[in-house]
Image (tube, rainbow, N blue to C red; front, side, top):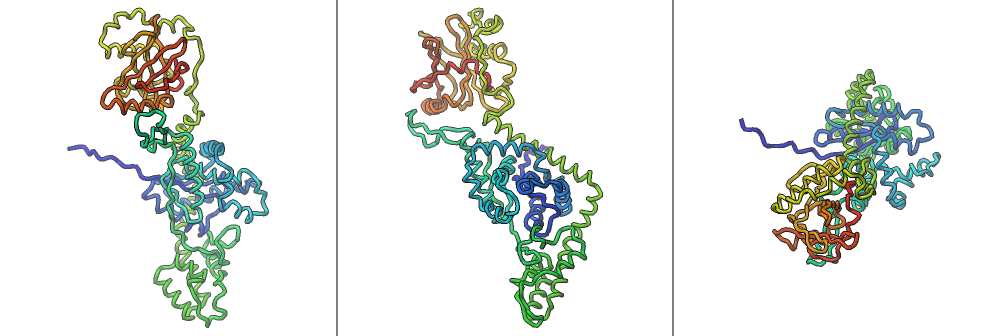
Length: 530
């Protein structure tokens, strides 16, 4: 049987979260949760409970926060989110959210946060609370960290949340401009080094700018006709039993229509009609609308039918919720497993971000300043005087011998390089390192090198002085990139030729004959970048 060569294409990633304000109501359900349940079938979904965001407004009284988190989790699972299909977790259980938020706060202008439309609106709505805090001002930036940490393709939001996602995209753009790898601009023409322009490499951006996944949010008013909200006390909750649902339905406003039951109404502007449109079967909804317009249906009867339609939708959710309430350990284990899965994805992002911002946990970028020959062993490992017979070898074999001696005897064991091809290794961060030995030792302490015209993040240059002592220069791409690209272009299919020249105690790299040469003295033994 012939083995299949097809491979699984990863699903696009979606990320969204919800603040734990307690038991969810119909507005929360139709505004987000119902859509999430559909998305999990087609996307790699990460959904979290934003307990850190809850503290931005309720920091003074967190007494019910843990209970609210648990109640929201029950509603998530009861409504149909499947922890075997999507990732469910608590925001604060993945500490990288706070870490990335802190890094973003270092470069995000205050003006970006102050112009978010909901900032002043919520301050006005919650005037009884002291919200003159950084936490409240910075919650959109924490939201950006929540999103970008998982590098999602899409963020499902309603139209009122587009501004938050646009801020997230701005933050990603600025971060990438500061820290993502660069390349020579495709618009740089000619062989004039002064005209070389550097641009972001679009294939190696550290953060993805997510797109908005606009979700249809049906109009779902509260009992008093305003937006359904816990703070307004006008909500029908997913966990309300049938008598409570019917009582709330009976008390719902009809928008001031039909002063008497003999007067016809307009279901298009009636809050009760809005709920019928969402929860009643189409044939029932049609009958209700005709009865309202012709005054053949009383409002109390219309509300009773609406209540029954709502509860018919809630009943299976409540059945599952009741079962889950009896298994609190299982519910919490779902969140713990989700946090472990989410943290692994978060660590993948943060490893790259820490490396880019100088916050990595290794010795990358550190140059240890020690005397050049501080031990006899160090001197012996670099001493080529006993290898005079190498000088008569073919250049390719000579290079290979010098490279192997450097790798086995000189290179610190912490610099864990893995071979990719002849003379090319990969660092732990998958950066390509060219290790090349001098092909010619000319007059006046000049060493000539030649290599294939490819792209490398680091080049290691091996040469020896008049005492036959080996020198190794570990040169990062930022030093040589512009001239390297010009030399590649000029070389065509041939090799790039470059040289090191010594003047007094300084070493200078010249690539392809372009000026200026670069002082690379400080890169000698700079193993930290490996």
